[in-house]
Length: 72
Image (cartoon, rainbow, N blue to C red; front, side, top):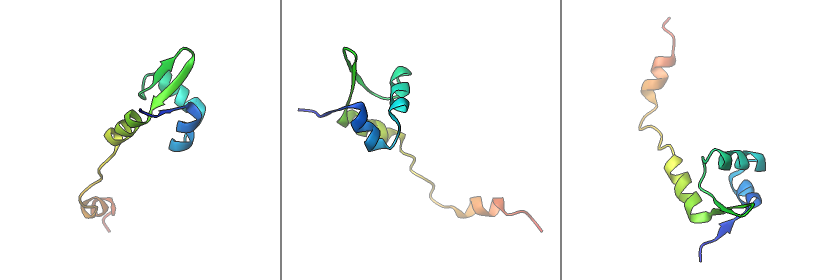
């Protein structure tokens, strides 16, 4: 059976406030389940959502640093 997280559980897990989570739910930014007035989050869906938001980074940093240094 899949684990459903409460707002408090997910707030602690992500390090964001409860009000932020409720705002994300309101704007349908984060996957959620409504059970009457209660909001729950499928833990597997949250991990997939986080993985899709992951930024892989760049292969190299050197060209960006060179462009940031002003000429003399």
